[in-house]
Amino acid sequence: MRTKELIEIQRKEKVSPYLQDLGENFYQEVKELINRKYSNYSKLRDEDVSRVSLALQELENIKNIALDLYETRERKIVSNALYFVKSGEEIEYENLTKEEAEIMRRIINTLKDSRREILNFGIDRREIKTFVEERIEKKEEEENISYITVRIVRDLPAIAGIDEKVYGGFKAEDIVTLPESNARALINSSEAEEVKL
Image 1: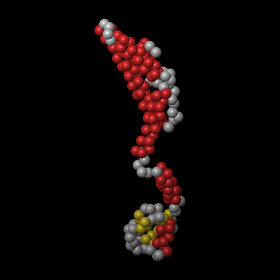
Image 2 (image 1 turned 135 degrees about the vertical axis):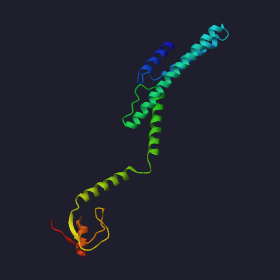
Image 3 (image 1 turned 90 degrees about the vertical axis):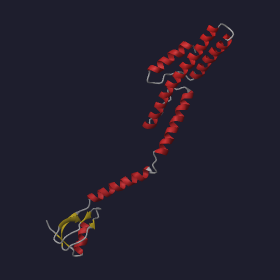
Image 4 (image 1 turned 60 degrees about the horizontal axis):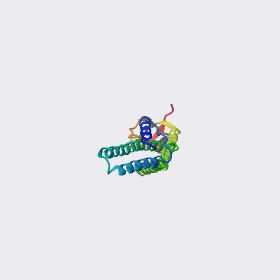
């Protein structure tokens, strides 16, 4: 790899919202480039100060470009990992170097573990499902409850209906509509009379 290539790769990575294909050994190639430049710099130490300064500046520029490129890709990797965790879609490792693929795996595993721990709230999803199913069954039962109208014979305290509603207190001669089983209990105890409508 040459410095010009690295600059072009950095430029493309910055302008694209997607990860660019760098090849499997990209970071190894960058290390080799930096090592070559450092070796050149080391050889020049005893020479002209301006040449040494120029070599050092080139070495620092390459390091900065590599760092910027890495950080740009790092942001995209974190963003992609978060997307895959939230969406549940299959994880794509396309255009990642082997080091980046490992980073992506670790981030995804950490995010998944964190979500399980933090968003658990001590409630099992099966419990919620059971609770919801029970409420639906209860609602269906309530819809199947038949009601009848009765006339109250004497003053009575409030009663709890089988539909979980509270009825009353009642005064003698009140006309009320109650769940049939509650009304029948009052009729059988001579506390109410059925009203035919």
